[in-house]
Length: 164
Image 1 (cartoon, rainbow, N blue to C red):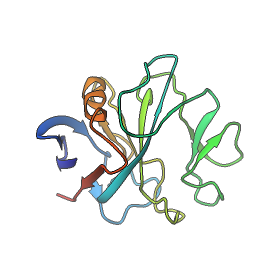
Image 2 (image 1 turned 60 degrees about the vertical axis):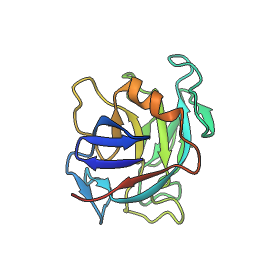
Image 3 (image 1 turned 180 degrees about the horizontal axis):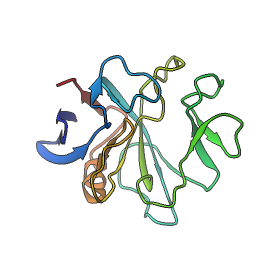
């Protein structure tokens, strides 16, 4: 799976419209820069909203979200770039959202081993907003497209993102 331009993702020989971070793709990403990191990132797992979605068809590990799930984006906290339970004392992002963009979240192996403070957190593949508005660093696709792509994804699947 590969990002081929600022608005295209190639998977299994098919091109899909996508949206990236509002400041483009950067090799030297840092927390809060709004960029999608460049590199090759294995897909780790899928998180989904069981109250809105059926169990997604994929070969990746799948976990149901709950209302108290979040992701720590606080570079000074020991939980930085890790899933957390709310309430949480560090800065964080809620994964259980009012909109639908996190109804399916594909967690990428970006800044995970080891986690480096300020290098960026919560880099996911998720549903795009209807307007295809830029993300804060994630990769977003139309819901039906992401669900189709997931059918062939496994822990051996990598996402290739290069600067252009």
